[in-house]
Amino acid sequence: MGIVGGLFVVEALSVIIQVLYFKRTGKRVFLMAPIHHHYEKKGWAEPQIVIRFWIISLDPRADRSGHFESAIAWFRKFW
Image (cartoon, rainbow, N blue to C red; front, side, top):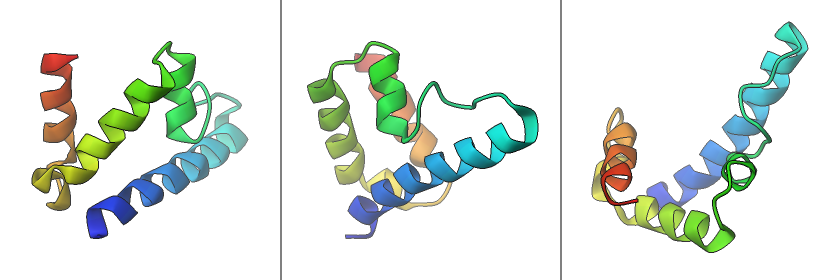
């Protein structure tokens, strides 16, 4: 449950980061927030984004702090 909920936290944090950074610098961190819209702007299809988020939520390594990047690196090998 914590991992699935973690994705909602990541979505919310991406908005907070985007707003705070834009107010300070006038530049954007992401093409669009929340983070799933950033990937849409990069040309990813919506089903591709949804499936990758599902897989991340099922990856037990994503539950450990500092290992979220390992899950993303694993995806890059295959997609």
